[in-house]
Length: 424
Ligand code: NAD
Image (cartoon, rainbow, N blue to C red):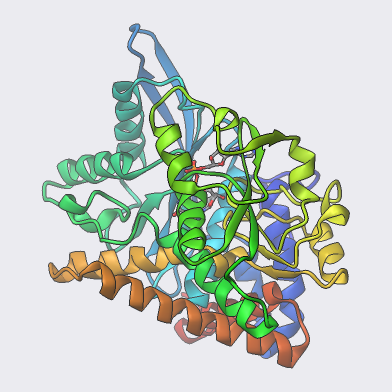
């Protein structure tokens, strides 16, 4: 199939990884395979210029994107990322994974994603607010509670979602909480959303461990990333008796074979100006040692392309739980599978966030709110059921869990595509 001209065939980046995953699933889609090219092209890509007046009076321009990969099953759904390495290719891949993920969970959404190519770390709060509001206004023509709904991702949070919601609402002239999820609870956010992605990682790991005859109590876990996903995952695994032996973030890696207390680490970092490496409850080790650690689970929760040909051979963990999107390259995955390592793929393992986002959106449209226990129980059921479907398909068809998850998700998407037919 011809590639869109806006991606370069020699430099496909993460979009190339997504295309390879689609290629791997296509032979398993039966007659629906004739529609698979639908997945190889995003439906809509919007690139916007985001000019921002900085506090010193100068104006800087940033490149922003919103991609709607597929909306056959419902409005687009996907996070908003601020990072200096964001590219159109990356946002396309992330939106494609959202298409598959929401379908694996059978949520009535399509896949979307947004990003701004910016390092937000040196920004003041008011610069960040102006950046967010201008971006929201620029992509306002394609987002909305029934069109495309944003959520937090790397370097964005509840506060950013509140600005998105307010800007969109002002532009359309009505208060519109359903345009974002992951917003503050008193703006219509859902209880349980903050920890939902990390909780989902725990649920799928627990289900896999049950089937593999492994105990959660005493299981040794190494986590890359201590942000929205990694922090929540660390706390929930810890609450359930697992031992967090190592944590890596942008500053480096820490290790304690007796266990790192994630609550103490969070308190330590929240004092501000502190580095993970100075946490008194652990020793520093090299970033390379993180990947070769003797542990039961590695949970990448930072960025794409972290498990590659460079480190896959050294990995000794029994299970990889993909909290991050796209952390494993297809070539590294082949090595891990050959070694018998179980990979719980991103489109299943980190789907807890979008599942509770869906609960938030439903609560917003009905203006009726659930308590946190109800949310957590529904999340647990949704992910356990999705895990079971993917696991059993993987066993029956003798395919990897990623390909099995893609079979489940892509079948739902392409069935919808076929039922809707081609216009005109
Ligand atoms: P975040 O910005 O809150 O945290 C990112 C973490 O990664 C930080 O601790 C940072 O220090 C660390 N990090 C950054 N670069 C690193 C590097 N080179 N080496 C090691 N660590 C590094 O982001 P997040 O929202 O937790 O998202 C993490 C991943 O999870 C992303 O892939 C995201 O797409 C995915 N994800 C997030 C959600 C969500 O609800 N936030 C949902 C699904 C998937």
